[in-house]
Length: 325
Image 1 (cartoon, rainbow, N blue to C red):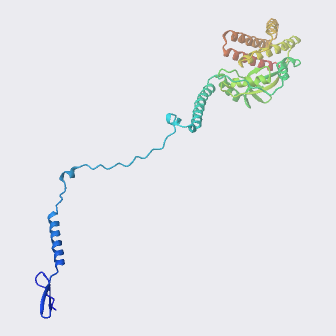
Image 2 (cartoon, rainbow, N blue to C red):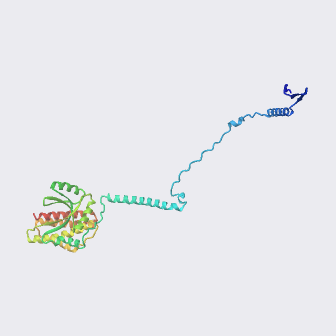
């Protein structure tokens, strides 16, 4: 048997018993031909796809990223009233704002009140029994003889008279009365007088509004008359002094005195008509000047008139002290 191929391998040649027979592979040839035809059809059906020139100029929209949500702020607008849970917070904020607002207003009022040139100073309650002030008011009268108990506003105590006079000059420049008293080895500066120790404390707080340093003090003064008539006049002067000190100090503090004006007027007239020595005449003039200043205040309501009355009473005390020397 021979197997042969010629050209395109048209078949298989087999020699049997001296005879050659050719067997063709029709199925394979047919399949090859079919594949060849299909390839040709595919080649013929192939199309070139060219890019569209107009698509190059088309705009491409790129989606923007979503915006981040900002945190919500708590306010007083409609958004803060969406739920009942926000009401307590809103109420608290309103309360805080109102407190700050009214606190600021009250603070401004307080500052203006304190910095006024002549601020009104409230009275200070003192832990004294109800009977004590009544006894103090009449202390100047109850002292036997010519001894005089006084309740004064003190502006300082100094070891030398020169130092006291320097401070006195500054206080007088503020329209506040001031007199220097020598007691033992010290020099005291007194600014006013009242009818009791409790009243002298209140008067001291009032005078502090004039920007002066103040204290309160009780002192006893002794006078000596040259005759029996002088002794009688000194005792009457003590009564008049106590009444005038109470009236002027009470009016400076915005209060009313409990002095019997008719008795006061009678005693003043008797002192004016009395024949007194030269030293007592000065004291009598001081009391008359204090009474006149109080009368002028009641007509004009000018505070400086009461301060003048206080100054005249301090002059009286200074002359009263000098009569014992």
